[in-house]
Image (cartoon, rainbow, N blue to C red; front, top):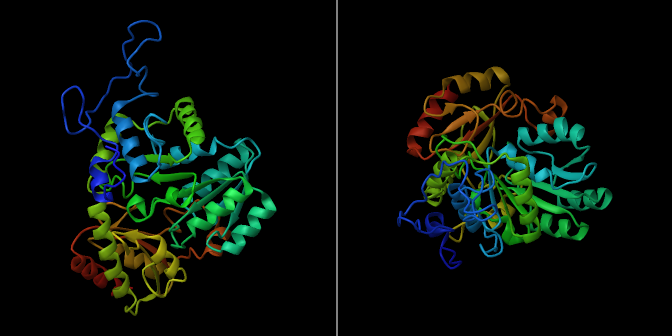
Length: 401
């Protein structure tokens, strides 16, 4: 179903989907076959080998393309410009293959640690990429860097991980178009429910579907969605040639998670706002960073750019700075009970972590300090539990600091 007039809540359930033509099943079956019979050499039903073609993966890819408003029909591209991969990093790695050796990529300075590691410690060497890290939340800095370096790709992330900066998506699209760069936005923290960068002119959206899209901490995967047919054709070739595709079981689980994405995101946003306001009143907390707070330096941009059912909504991620240093933040993290001390985010259960030691440990010390990722920084992923229970858990843990 591709009705563009449907609301997002309905598109989560029906977008890019249709009952199985063979049985009428309302859910796409899990197709595990690795290969498909051909009537004659080269004569088949559109399926040859599961790395290249898989019904279950195609269903997920079409759904994500619908949610991100790719604007491509199945008659344009088989999965409407959506591509699913074995992990978020597999998606990023495939996207980078759009660049020729020695190309320049202008990248947000505050990005997921795995993105930083892949760019700086792998692709600098293996692909000769020239990586220019810039605070893209500063539009003037974005324009200067693009003018000076003439990048082939601009890679933005918003909200950023873990300092929750907000990047002006429209400005990235405008600057990228002016300098001829492919523009990419990592939309993991917001999900398509809160923002759809393709609608603002971005070329490619990337997701770690492990997070909010899957939503249940039981699948690892990544996705790319493009609005440009020329890039869809290139990505389809790269996806098949590189082969880091999502398997059918993971595609099924992810598609099941998508069905409740809109409902979950509403709860994540509501609870995170309540918790962020509560944290601002706690003596053991030095500073709270949440785009929904008036104290956030990019609050106005977030309010305009991140929307849910016509109203501003700011996601389920909160960053706090515990008063003191590593001893205090460690005691706090050791005392939480309902918040699970674990990497990842976006699941129905609340998670909490220490980026400097955990998710961003691979980022060089000097870069971490420059970004403000200190030993007192703690990142919270607010789940969908009763918010009062979550606040009580944080309250008892902060009293241990």
